[in-house]
Image 1: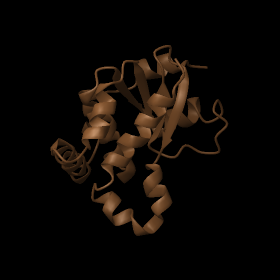
Image 2: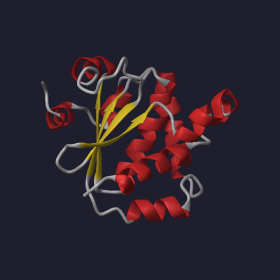
Image 3: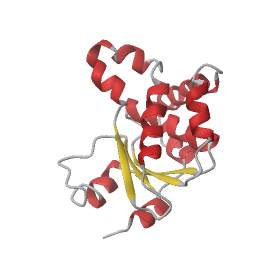
Length: 168
């Protein structure tokens, strides 16, 4: 069984991941990046929480560029690692995650993006699966706004909660 650290080491960086996409998929990622670059994308409160992080976290992501949820949320993860040097991201394919993680984590299937939040020792401290909780709770009513990039802050908050809840 491959360790989480080995999977992380063999994962690819964000730009390599994006390069696998079709032009429309890459354009969707660039649109999310533009939204994240605006001053109002991430609240001052979330920015402060992110800045205050002292622990190191590795985000092992299972994703595919054809997936709209990955186009949105993996882009947010990349933004987090750019804002906070204690966060790094590595991306593996859905197939590799199914081979390496599904049975180990007792899952019936791998929904993407699937993010394992790992501490500095590469031990699992949490998970983010597919969409932020606010979007899951809102159901179909919020889906158009979510797809338009209006819930980027929700993804950030969900991850901040996982980071802050992790035991040292």
